[in-house]
Amino acid sequence: MKKILIAFFLYHFQICISFAQDDFQQIQQIPSGVKSITIVTPIYSQKLSFSLPASWDNALQERKGIMFMMEFKPKNESINSWKNLLTIQGFENLSKRFTAQQFLTETSYRFKSVCKTDFVFTDLGETVVDGFKSQHGILGCSKVPGQNFSETAYWLVIQGENDLYVIQKAIRSNPGDVLTKSNLETFVQDIKPIALCKKVGEVHECLK
Image 1 (spheres, one colour):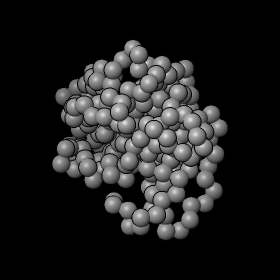
Image 2: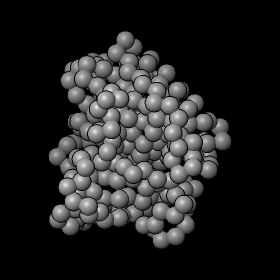
Image 3: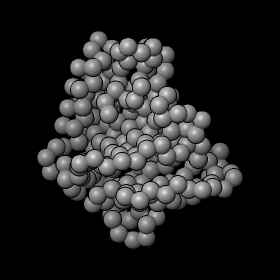
């Protein structure tokens, strides 16, 4: 079943790669000893930078209308039956129409209509990513309707210059076992730092 809607690194050794928005190319080989990859990808009017464990790979990339999306999963998990999933989305020209807070709130309403009494939402409030207003929170179901597992995710919505950027890291677990404030920092540690950059410079550069 697809989504309802749509460690501290052992080595201080990272490599930086870039993903083209419309022409994704798989990385053929990651050097041994690398525990984290820094990904820089142009999405509409800016570049988004984030970290990814080297044990994960790209599972999906698509563009539909005003939305661009990439998904990543552990290499030993299937995109059709995953337990951990990272989703990166860009919504073209949407930051002039919706604030990050409005986007996250509207999304929570959709989750509530699906999850009903098993609805999970913790609004973590406003934050700032490289000077851009952002909103983050925990969203999901403590039990997915018709399934025997919970699905919750950390959501970060960034209001860019022209576009909205959404980062979700999701996990499926036993019913009732969900993300909370107390275990969130450890859960999102391996995708940080997250940065929003100018769409200039070399493909792998994140200039602010």
